[in-house]
Length: 71
Image (cartoon, rainbow, N blue to C red; front, side, top):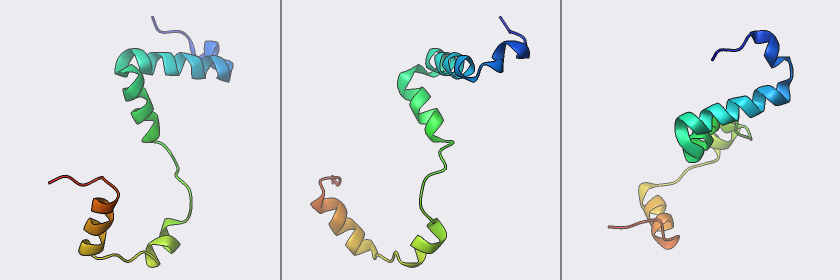
């Protein structure tokens, strides 16, 4: 059932209904992943990328040392 736009003046109500609809459609994990798509993130990527240099070998070494790598 589609409700009129005037029902959604209360933003808390809108947020609750939106989250409920997402959970029903996508499941709880899907809802979280969907919301993450719209995250602004943090920091200044443009400045940070200039200071971030790593070779492929350094990357693989880091991943292996931190238990995230499987062959």
